[in-house]
Each structure stands twice: as structure tokens, then as C-alpha cells.
View (cartoon, rainbow, N blue to C red):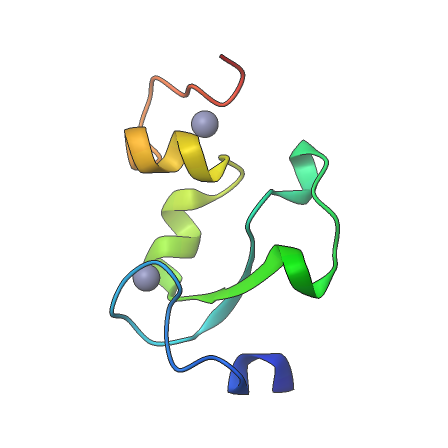
Length: 69
Ligand SMILES: [Zn+2]
Ligand SMILES: [Zn+2]
């Protein structure tokens, strides 16, 4: 995917740009537009999953999820 080539690495850590992540997940109303898409490594993308950035920053993707609080 050429959009990944615009990224030097994962937006969240020092890992490689392996996958595209929606900053606000589609499942939570995020839109599939460039402004909402960043590159992420597999580990970050997997742990962020459908959490909001704020929730992920607090919980690291582990329960208890605070996306809806
Ligand atoms: Zn990462
Ligand atoms: Zn969450």
C-alpha cells in the first residue's frame, strides 16, 4: 500500500510502518480518510484494536476499557 511509504515508521512507537491504523476506529465512528489514518507496527495496531487513542494511551489495550467513559 503506497500510503505506508509516506511513513518512516510506526506513528506510536519506534517500530516499522507495517499496517494502517485508524486513529479513531471505524467501529467508533472514525472515517476512512487520510486525516484519520496513520501507519503503525503490528504490535501497536493489534493492541490498539478498536480502542480510542485516549483509551489505548491509558490502558494499553488491556481491560478495563475506558473508551466509553
Ligand atoms: Zn508501534
Ligand atoms: Zn477502550
